[in-house]
Image (spheres, rainbow, N blue to C red):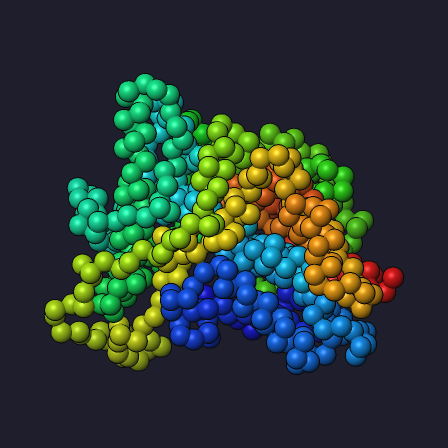
Length: 522
């Protein structure tokens, strides 16, 4: 969707002299808008690095992006060793930030993630996968036990209608096929009935037929079809976005689990469940934040004597109950299944799914529609309407394994055999750029031999009521990366403008700004 000027307001001008807002390929003010050709996570990561080189090494920004009150590194500082001081990424931006830090661990010093998303198959299938009925009696095990289509059944009915999918044909007329549409179902027992159920559910056409229906409409050549599909797509996403996991949406699934966000031990709407990587304990905290007239104008209460700032220890089982659609990474056969899935994925020669010719330009004359805007009649021309966000989200979701190369294994959170699970990722502050005499290559090599996947220090902020990116992924990331500080705002959703989420972003960004300044001064 692109960046907006008010995003700068998360950064204190005392701590950050410059804030760079990046509209990735096809988004916001980047051109061509909505373009899917040349789209991949690999290219987006390189775009971020080229931007860093362009801004820093070409001297367009004097020094590093940290402090307004301090002179930066001297003019004889070697080029190429000045990193981003902090990267802030939300939702899909988390995926991009993680991938960038993985490839260039010495070029970013800290990260703040909001609404954690790693774009794994289970996350895509939660939001867009066809509903599947699971039963404990079938012997079929799944990597997810709930789906948005089941939690929001009324919205899903309308979303399916807008996809052009016929219930009976299952989109057979589109002749869909893709290696990315792997089954969510793990290998069952040898029982013949279970095997038949497994094979039926394993067919790629049965996993994301609705999603693929939108793929051919949103990326097809008929602008009227595209506009109608985008409208239906937006209603589905925004309905989930605004509803969250309210009590009305609390439903039991086949495994007798409840998707409500209610936590009886938490009485305050400003409570957080936080993981402190230093003390290595989960605890309850109060957000200590309230909003003014503007959603992005956040007052942070720094009064440590506030009686509401009480901390109570939280059991791991209570954290796991915050999950909405999946079990942990160590459950059932998930680790082995993911190793098998990703073993050759990043080296496989794949291509995006081709747009089906069934969606040709309409044979009827294109008719503009008159709409009312600010009391004035205006003409809506579908041919000039580019729903970039829905187009790109759909493109990346359908072609997930292709567009994520070569980061599929890294983002799966599953370590290769022989690597301890909780040592997959590790964090340490890189040396100050002005103090380091090592080249980029020498520094990267030194860090790489110490840690399997070195990453910068990171604070992740997650809404417990986020139905777009539920807490499952953030908790999974914590399991694989204990040095990550995870802060779950129990009553908050997906929006960065939620008062508690916004306050947590401000506090996290300030904390890193102060810590990096102290490190540079020492």
